[in-house]
Image (cartoon, rainbow, N blue to C red):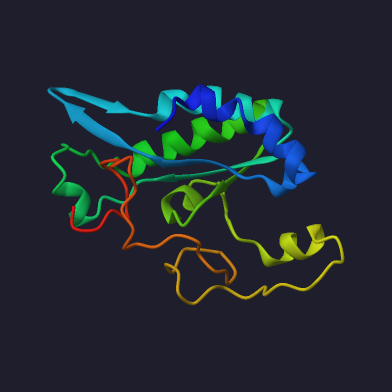
Length: 180
């Protein structure tokens, strides 16, 4: 994966290409925790910088979730740590404060624990928003996509990827990498 600063540095150009910052979504997702010896580590420390990059590019919102530790993730040789309810509430509070300080709307992607802690639920694929942004205001489906997880608020869409495709980055937390 390219360094996050390199990716974040492309946000301004992406917003310009899209023509409207509402057409760009920044996801700080998934938030992962793992153990290294006696210490619990996380990518959460990058949140302020990622949120700042989003706000600086004019992107109005950020979507977040805490990783669901699926069995295939556990087999990848990482000592994952799954934060408990109190830790999740503290994470939600911190993310909410970071977003609010930067004028960002914050949404929880299919993560009921973050919604319960006060973060608005997300529709990462939002048919109403897509229709409002379409140059001719063409309609888009607005009902929940039945093929998604129960907590997912997305409307129907066509995925351009596949869970059978192997990504060359081989991230240990990836939900999609088959056979791993």
